[in-house]
Length: 312
Length: 253
Ligand SMILES: Nc1ncnc2c1ncn2[C@@H]1O[C@H](COP(=O)(O)OP(=O)(O)OP(=O)(O)O)[C@@H](O)[C@H]1O
Ligand SMILES: [Mg+2]
Image (cartoon, chains in turn green, cyan):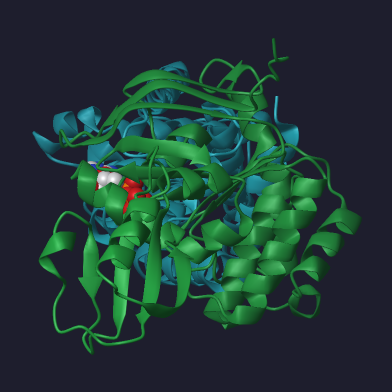
């Protein structure tokens, strides 16, 4: 038997109905191990922010249980919240405070004694050090987001939530951010982020969860997910163009390119049989020759779109 | 207990005062001076004495109360309303800090500012009149309790308000009239009936009367009644604050 590591975050049968009667989360179950990076994907209004808000204590849950490192988020809120850092989706900052002071404020609020050296380290890692005395309102949007990240890291959290961290962020900050995320992971910090950009999940996450209509429709290791759900396409460059797909191939999932020069066969790597061998045999018997062939694998994006369409 | 959290809120709020020094200190001092010039010097010269005290001296406790009430309320209500308004309240809600600690931070800061202001008003007054304080300790108790309870009240107001209008309407339409009709600038026995009886339903009367007793040993109601009413008000506010946080009223969705 495998040794079961204790999950750093455990969500059990979580439901959330807002006061207007809208059910934003339906029976969510989730376990995240220490040091994992989990990306939550889902269309607008899926419930990603609601889920994070419940875990962080910003929104009350309606039913279910959430624990962080074994501590219940309601009974032991001091312990759980001290472990959590949150970078919210919206750019909500004070205006007249200085960058340094607002980060120091966050550290105090989370119950940690002052530590200028740590704040300096965080600000430097986010290229904010030369702005430390600036009033927040004089910063650009991207810099304000950095300030929010600095605030979230000010109290040395072991679980970090990033709610759409790359919205409105330029390439260089995005790079910085992934560098920081990887650095934090190396220190053992668990990171849960939401994003609409599937490439981001693909680039950074160990596991990917997909939320739609308040339901967790899937949570899976990224590589397995891509293998498991990945559709592949076999593209055959024909020697002689075809005007239409011969009747014999009606049972195959075949498409002909617009110029008739390529046959595209879509198959599922999940299935026991891909049908490639019989397709090849049939092509040979019909004397359709090809010059070249290659396969492409669908991206996480395609997987995601498929899933959401299926579940809706 | 999250002492660092309380300190963080307290310091943040006090820093806010520093940024709005004119509004929080200079303006009240100027207004108070105007009161002394208009009421004390101009009108007061035609009113002999009220209950054996010169008119200028008579209005000092009322002026202090007026400033204590309005500034406790506005400081505390604005302090908690603003983070709600701009959204920065998310941080407080996600922090390992209890209701009581949040209240201590905000209300503590608002009350400190109000007490400071009360003392500044007192000093300002001493430039215009010959100040005599019969019971300085009782005076401080009244100033402290008033600042605390009305800061609590302001905190509740700030949580309840969901727009700026609600935030300003209560101090303007409730507190100012109550202060003016509560015998701050006159003794209620100068009023004709039925106003004289009606004013005894005004809670501010009890505050002003109590504070005035600590200055001149004259009062409209027993000083113990005054003390009891301010304590009742304070515990009432505490109960409401406790309830608000227990239920997450208007803060946690
Ligand atoms: N305070 C609230 N009261 C009522 N309904 C709410 C509230 N907050 C969110 N909702 C609803 O809950 C649903 C989920 O919202 P949520 O913000 O969690 O979505 P999301 O997945 O984060 O979306 P996005 O990608 O746009 O950020 C939405 O339909 C939203 O309208
Ligand atoms: Mg969201």
